[in-house]
Length: 262
Image (cartoon, rainbow, N blue to C red; front, top):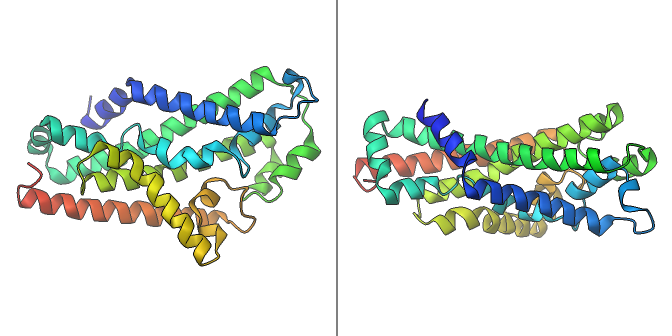
């Protein structure tokens, strides 16, 4: 088994992966209960409304916690490798550039996997437990300003799948920030918390220049700002990922050349 897949499988068996999944699902359950109509019996609620309420809305916990949850599974792995001494052995075997690339892209994959599994499980829970009789007027009333409203017109289920893929994609950008900073500051707490702090600073900047579409939560929650486009989301995420990649790689290569990393 290659080093890349060993890293992936190791994290998928770890406690922090399952803790992240649990928090992710519970955050969506909490958000759904905030919108729940108490006049309707619990299991007579519409399964698609339950799902979108868990993901959308100004009070949703998922959009708030996403930067933090995205970093927990893997963003601090380089710090752990460095402090345990395994990084020196791995770099000697495969080279610094390959080591960095594996760390960076494994982080993206694991973040995406975490959100796909977590949100996918919540979607399945909604399908199994709640009514299959959709209130289409209420559903389209919620998603009419969504970036993917046209997909919702095709199929509500396809909209749900698209929403899961979207959140996994954006969350990977958040976690890239944490991993990148771990090459500058070798501290696990910094790797975990920095995506949340930076996303808050980016939100303040977006509000300062009065462009809500650039707020990280508006990029993650596609129902928050009506003018958010798919092109904006893709460019936003790619700029963050590419910036994180080159800044971290430059720092790591320079450190290795000076023997700082070893």
